[in-house]
Length: 89
Image (tube, rainbow, N blue to C red; front, side):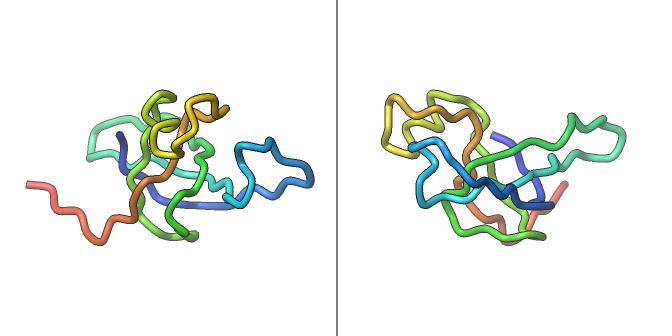
């Protein structure tokens, strides 16, 4: 699981059936000072998140398929929550 910020959306004319009625969002991983971020990635939205939202993302295929309740889904990353606040101690 990672925390990231939604920075964009992906618009498609034809989607995989597993993506029906779900949006694809571009997520930028959030890292602490001194860490190097991996690149942005696309995640399937399961929460109605929007651009600018801080989100919790499951980036493991098996867990993502469990969240979608579809053992055969063609998915790796799925947004599973919107984060209200983050405190680093």
